[in-house]
Length: 308
Image 1: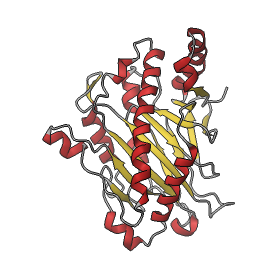
Image 2: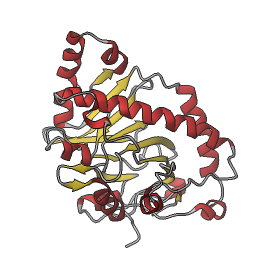
Image 3: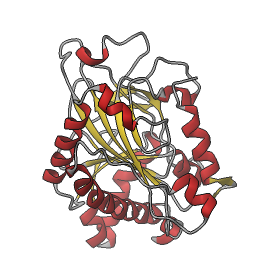
Image 4: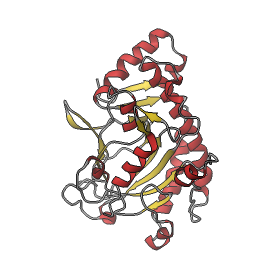
């Protein structure tokens, strides 16, 4: 069995108890060993994702002087330029900066709590140079939140709890959304020793929903038994991984998926990829096995800032 098996979410939600048991028998070992699944049956159009990539690519190919007016630090909304992040720092490893750029967005619907809103629910910044991007991304984010809650419902049942075991804590959740651009060597130069498009790390939230493009300099997943392996690719599937909060929530039963993105390959130095990455969390103030969810998230976000 692949370290990242595929689960049909439509079959789960419409399935008989026998169907759900069969899915659980596939999903549970993967969540324990790698912390990753692929999910089909989500109903989100592939063409919509392609249009988002087209608009984002137009932004990333703008001159740096134009992009710089949207420059922000990690954890803020805007453009994360070259050298902004070093994700390996989150697991205590010093490394060169990640070889990528990102457009970063986050939850923006205020709660009414001034302090919470000032930290977690600020307005997003939309680049004027690509005016169609907002009209494409906002409905996609609505679908991502719905899909993430569906995943949490499935995970609640897999855990032997009720469907709302996790989603009762997502009434007003935080989330982050990165459009990651992985340019070729002509833009970023050759990789330094220990440098990756994204260094080895785990994500911080509950679940991450990833839509990615295939590439030689692509996603790898770590397991104790097999080390680093290339992640399988299915154009119709989203890649799902467990984050640190979910691992803590399950007392370590499910593994926070450790992963990395390889640097531009030597035999395809012009390879350019764009990933759409949705990080789902929970309502601020949620107690996750004795840890305040958002105190933890802020600490982790601060850790991956490359400017140190």
